Every structure is written in structure tokens, then in C-alpha cells.
Image 1 (cartoon, helix red, strand yellow):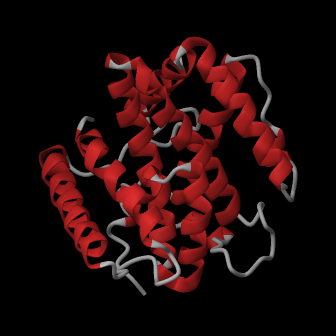
Image 2: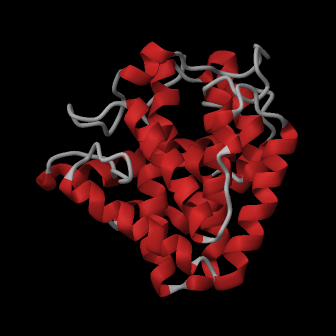
Length: 249
């Protein structure tokens, strides 16, 4: 098993095309279940951070689009909705979602984070006149469902550079300030106010050093030999560019 500490930092950075390959490597036990659970806190925090960046630079809307699609794909895989019963992918069960992982205060569970992110996706859809309930109503989701969602959300966000999506995210952020477990909220990674920045700096620096070592040595510390250097290089390059996003909120 690999360390779970870094998964919340770089899995949300994976593109929709990369997230499936990463999922296979997670399924090979590159991460513990705690590491899988960490990704929900990571996606929440990363989407909130991106929203702040995009308010100043709306041309970077593709980063938000990728993160939303990647979340949907990984969540459907972890909850055994996509590629159901294919044992090369990682899965979480009901008990896993009832527990807590990195960044969860004692008042919010992984399942509640999952519900917040799902509600965020559905709310963004409604803001653009789209109904994406099919993602979660069907017991088994197919590639066709995911492709439909990818196309519709891509077309929607391009109409206004994601302006409506940013309004939805901002509203979710405000709701979580009043209550972390608000189903329509979006809770960031939680630590005490005094520790927030130092924890994020320390954890991001650790992740960067490990990924840099991996990238330069062409050996795999996280993903296993099957994850090729080209894809790892893409993630590493994007992490260098987007590193500061994790420290914004």
C-alpha cells in the first residue's frame, strides 16, 4: 500500500481521460481505501480553489470543466456504478462512506462530501437548463451516460465561460460556512484556522517532491509500473502550474 497523504492533491488534477487510468492503478492497491476516500475532500477543495482563480481569469474555465468531469467519472467508479463488478477498479462500500478521511472534521463524513459534490454537479446542470439526474438514478451507468454528460457540460460552460457554474459554486461555499454538512454546500478541507495554511503548504510540498522524484527517475512511487511516464509527466506539469490553487481558500 502507498501513502494516502497525497491522493487528495493530485487525483483532482487528472484530466477526464487520465482519471480512468489512474483508477485502474488505484484498483491495483496503489492506495488504501482511506486514500480513495481522500479524493472527495480533494475535489471539494480543488473546485472551490479553481472557482476563486476563475473569477480573475475566466479563460481558464477548461480546468473547472475537467475537474467536474473527472469527479463524476471517479465517483461513479468508486461507488460501483460505472464498470460495475469489474474488479480492476477500486470500490467503496456503504461503511466506507459513513466514515471520515483526510480533511474531514468530526462533523462531516465521506458520504456527505460525496453528496455535496453530486448536488453541486446537478445544480450546475439546472443553472444551464440541463437535467443530469440520470447519472445517479440508474443503478448501472454506462459509457454512454458519461459521454452524454461530458458533452452537455462542456457545451454549457462554453456558453458563458462558466459564469453560471461559478455562481452555483459560490453559493455552495457560503452554505458550507454556515454548516459543513449542508447538502447544498461544498466544504473545503478542514483544519483549525491556525493550521490550515501550514498543513496545505507542507502536504503540497511533500507531494511535489515525491512526484518530481518519480518523474525524474522514471520509477513509480504511487501508480505502479503500468502507469506510463507520458501520463505521469502530464499530471506533474499541470501540478507545477496549478500548485498555488490549493492555498487560496
